Image (cartoon, rainbow, N blue to C red):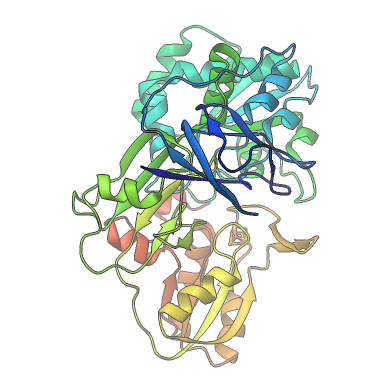
Length: 434
Ligand code: SF4
């Protein structure tokens, strides 16, 4: 019997409260947990029996009926209420409850579909647009209807030509929704960066998109909205990318509509299993993902990917850390430095970071203020190398100063990108420099 572990926290806010008990027989799509304040309903992705309930998860032994059918959510009077019943949250990783975003009223505003898929290696959002652009376009229009926004934009990197072509073909002569092509830089998918690219307006880290009359929603989230409105389907399946050191090859593998709670290990096995010695299983993308436990990681509503990496490089010496607000945080950089067997002698933050309620926020994501001071500080602390998590633009400026100071540079994405033969985050091509 297959075991599915459905996490009780798959969103911002507190974990949901279970509404089932051990021994209950469930049908796929049935609601099993409800939010405690901010959050979203959770439904089972499989039919079967509840065998364990902990503070973190509900464990279900599937009855192997392997059906695509599900218990439908109730019909609602509004699109926002439908999103609530379906348990829709930001599928791009943020996990913010969608029904709250849809309660905004922006009669002179915009819905922005975030189809930037900013994390390299992950490709399931772009593949969805290539194969089924309508499901996302309809989601944009449902979100426009809910918020009364007269205009929608689909933000996508211009390098994704096939997806752009399929979107434009599906949109035809329509003027209410428009494709906006963006540059290929990290973190172009940050919502304030998208709003800046479209409207040339930087919101402060304290401001929400609504202050620019915008509601920004991930492409897969919008697809989930379409499925909830048209098919009364709760969020029980997830698109996800699996890549890395796998026996079937290093290319990205796209899995569409995997039942939530599926062990990541099973998906890796479907790709032939891990190919020899490995370093980490990164859950998420190269920039913001974290090292996961292969025996415990499961698919959630916000899972972006699983990447099996090569072993990390080793440097048994003093290293300095330069932290970015949009890439790896200090804890993740320390985790990587530890795996490299390095001794952390100094930590500093990008000077574009403002601390707001204990969290690092970037003033202008992806727009570098210069990193010389930070690198000089790390050298003064005795660092012989630096490990950075900066955005594309800032890493470019690190590369303009650190090597001149005799400090070799590691980027926290290096071992991921080396695994899949992706270009490392270093100097930007001249045409991308401002
Ligand atoms: S400007 Fe600094 S904090 Fe902002 S994205 Fe770039 S490195 Fe990160």
